[in-house]
Image: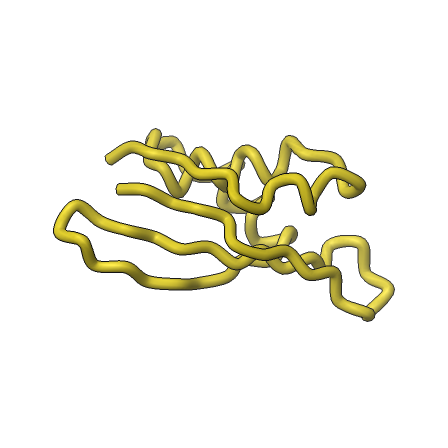
Length: 81
């Protein structure tokens, strides 16, 4: 599986957690899906998930990155099972 962050948007809600990350998931069979996750959900999932998949790695990277560097995550990719 390969997961690539494709975009980041900060919503105009005034909530510091309202950042959206769009990503592309490509599986071993070549099927691709797009999805998004907000910062609040990424924090919860990164804390609760214990597996070491590409998706988990992406969530942990989002959570570990400072808000000012979020745009720098665009194009980052993570590989794993």
